[in-house]
Length: 121
Image (tube, rainbow, N blue to C red; front, side, top):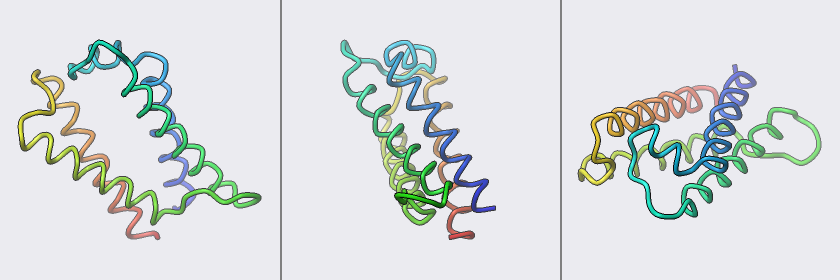
């Protein structure tokens, strides 16, 4: 189950990272999220997600340099979920209903992954 969680983390973080890095303003518009005039911050977030995906991939390979373990991925997911919860609770996360729905879904996915990683860490 640990290998499956690492692959799931790699897939989710990599797909989000690629979308944010290559199409930051389009992704914001598509998901109904606030977008700025520049794609700098979404691209930086995309790069961070790609780095986390690479670390999870390395951890799953089990040889050579080690990446993140499930405990570290759990911490990242919990901190990300907490930040989303604060933004959603304060009403500053998104002005559109679709954007809030996407963020609530992401919040629940992050919490579910963190719970699974807690069980198997």
